[in-house]
Image (cartoon, rainbow, N blue to C red; front, side):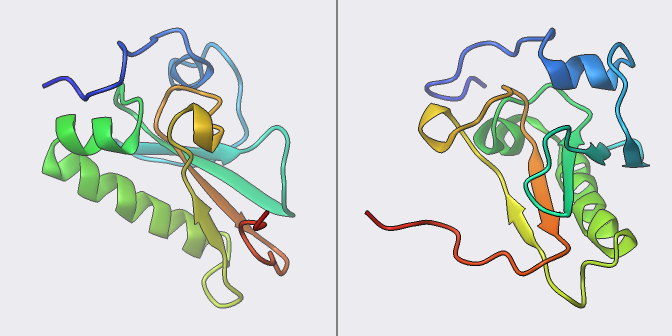
Length: 126
């Protein structure tokens, strides 16, 4: 089922290439549902990306096309990564950008985990 407003998945995007091992990454976690790795331009002391293994462009695409097992497995992986990085007690932020207005740079659904310091307010009002 197509998701309104989305084009076709680009199998040559950087995350697809990381999943295939064509581009190296500093992985911190992987299982059958997800891969997590350090961001190459970290915005916090801890900045890790968690991506599903399947070809999904956005959250809407992921929730419309992925199986219940994939969705559950992905979000459990996000929690496992946060725990493994000792982020649970001090706190952390999860961020997922969807689309151009939100600043999504790679057309593969992904979640950013930020931590390691106080993160402050998320949006600045203008």
